[in-house]
Image 1: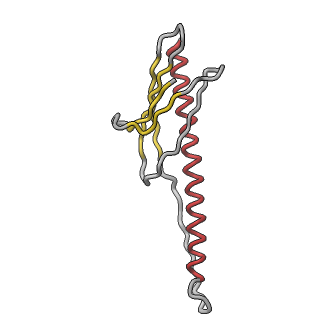
Image 2 (image 1 turned 90 degrees about the vertical axis):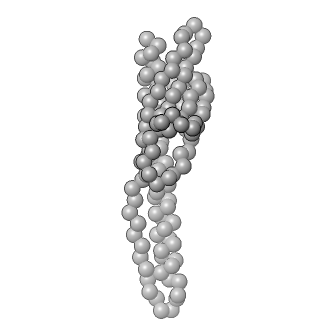
Image 3 (image 1 turned 60 degrees about the vertical axis):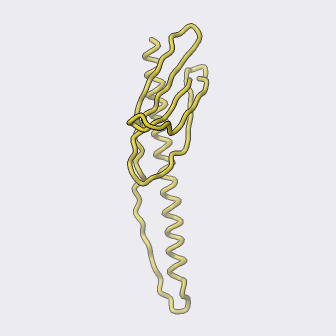
Amino acid sequence: MVGKVTSMSGGAVKESFEGTTDNDGQMSYSWKIRENGKSTKYKVTVQASAAAYQDVTSSTSFKVKPASTTTTTTSTNDPASNDAGSSSSQENLNQHNNNFREALHDTITDFRHEIIKGINESIRNDLR
C-alpha cells in the first residue's frame, strides 16, 4: 500500500507512507501533526495493490481540532520573595502544556484509528 496525506484542496503533500498489510489485510501508520492552533481538514488517499488483483485507490478525510484547554494562573505575593508568584505561574504553565500535549496526542490517535478503519473498510468493499 502507498498513500499520502494532503490538505483538502489537494495542495502540497503533508505526509507520504507505504507499507504491507498483515494477514488480516490491516496496515497502520502514524505521524505527528504540527499544532497550529486552528482546526485543519486533511485528505488521505491510499492505493492498494496485490498480485492477481486490480489496484484499488480510496480516499477519506479527517479534521484535526486544537485541544480545548483552560489556563488557570495563580500568583502569590510574598514580600519575602520577589519570584514566588513567578514559580507558581511557571508550574501552572508547564502543567497546562503537558495537558495540551496529552489531549492533542489522544485526539490524533483517535483520528488515526478512524482513518485507517475507513480506508481498510473502503478497500475491502472495493475488492468485493
